[in-house]
Length: 216
Length: 216
Image (cartoon, rainbow over all chains, first blue to last red; front, top):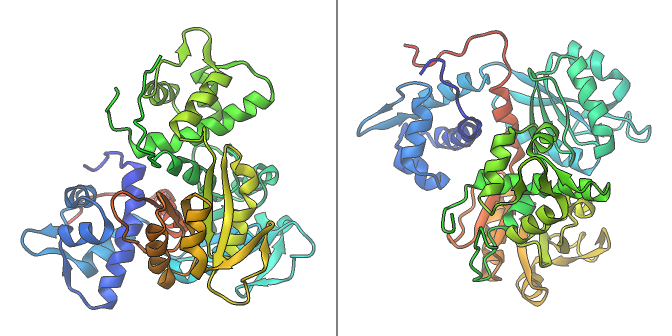
């Protein structure tokens, strides 16, 4: 399995596993089965076993997974065995809301810098972090070893911010602006555009009408 | 293909296609090829052709897709040929930020009601919508024919809100609270938990260290 490419869907489930495992760890639960994981997370246990098997032979038949060991392995897989510093660009309502989630991130990931273009925002504090002008982005990202950027600026400013994050040497971007950004292939970008999420949900609204395809 | 189950990944790409097609339509571009779509959206053209073929034979060789026709078909597929009313529960920073996206939703989807538990919030306005007490949720959802609920309350309140949305007969929920909610199988729920997104991005940070699996 060494060089097998792991799908993004699998990678995205790992933090979900990690969060629940952390809960179990707090409650001092020593082991957990794929059935228990599946029931709690609404996933097929076979899917969970398959996901975790990509990374190694973690489970033991009849016992399940050792919670502490699995936490340690998933952290390693996700590069969370080191502290990952995050920059937030855009100190509007969304940026402020996201910075409140810092408490949930734990696991060695932390928003450590916030940037905004508006003079009225610069110098104010968001969750104890002083908002800096965007002009200082490149220098600060490099000085603080920031690896991930979150973009919460309006869509027409988003590409310029992305370019600056890339110039600063960032490795990954989470983009909340409802626009498609171009970045070099070595930079990983995820779109966290909730409008897409919301519109896709409408598909599942069933008025008892049968969805037929290939109609003509 | 009539009864073939369409994967959630495909469904989630449809609004992305729709947004770009709407842009093309505004610019009065009559047709678009899967190559152009792929380049703009950073997707494989073959993937795009495959996605759209689930729903019918939309493209014509050498010409591409008729923009207006494709918009109409995707809207139908997504149930957006009717107005879909949305309720937002939680009028904090995140709720306020999301309500600002109303302008981007277009496509017959609209946040029409906002609820909060805090007396200080009730009666205030968010984007011209008066915040109502959560007690009024069930009645308002039914009276306004609201089909989708967005949960932006703190995690410890989220399950109670989800239960009320379900009781009101909602069809789908977008959950921003960082917790797993239980809803009946006929209600579609998507987790829009950005911490999961963010933690999964760390996987793609490559320090030149080779990720090996099955080490022992």
